[in-house]
Amino acid sequence: MLKILQDLLELQAVDMRLQDVHARLAAFPKKIADAEARTAAAKAELERSKAAQLATVKDRKKYELDVEGWKEKVRKYKDQTSQIKTNEAYKALQHEVQMAEEQIAKAEDRLLEQMVSGEEYDRRIKISEKELKEVEEIVRGERSKIEAEKAEDEKALAELNIKRAAVVPRIPEKLMDHYDRIVKKHNGVALAEVRDEKCTACGMRVRPHVFQEMRRSNSEEMFHCETCTRILYYYEPASSAATASSATPSAPAGSLSNET
Image (cartoon, rainbow, N blue to C red; front, side, top):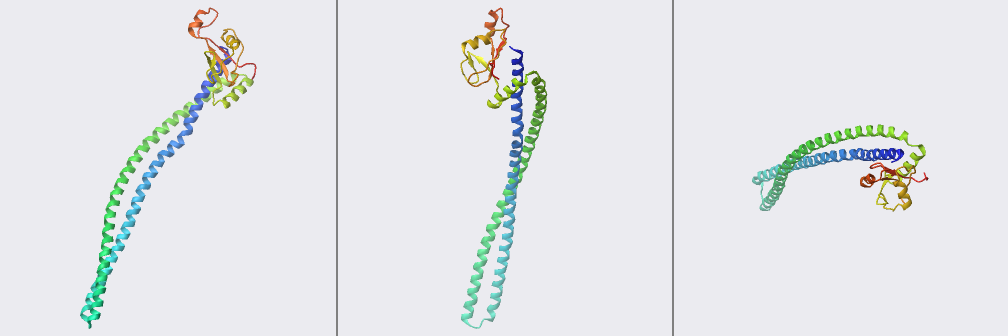
């Protein structure tokens, strides 16, 4: 294989790994945000239960005051009974007592409902507190794992950038520009292997005379795919190479026609 093709393949391998590392690093903020969102949701559920419980307590106090207020009215009405002179006044007072007692019954019913609701919210608060602790523990573990993975990827990124910086100077500027254009066009893949006389990237068949030239062990020419424009390289199968005395085992030949 041409030395320049080996350099390009090395560069592509580094760039593809860099692409993967960058993608993983870009995903970390969302992973952390998702973990924190679960904690926030558990906290919000606990706060809703506490707010509902507080509202229930306020309503219960209000209904307790209502009950006491109506009971006080009943006592006053009954105290006035001895002062009543006429039958009509007595009936009117009894009617007031009856109405007050009905209000007492309604207020006591509402008070009972609030007491039941309060017990339910107490239960919900205990459940929410337990769930929050569990979620916080899980999220702490997840965040620790995420931070460790992020640190590893940042280390890998630094190492890959060093490797790339070592490879790039070995590639002619014009060819490097051509490589960069293909990378942008084809999502990071600028070189494609030829197998069964086809470009493995797009499936386009390589012209017979081009393929024959690529197979020559002493070929100095580079070729590119006529369809996807990727730089082509070829590895002679070991069995075929072994039978050709002029060929080096597993030695590949390359591509990129004179167009750059």
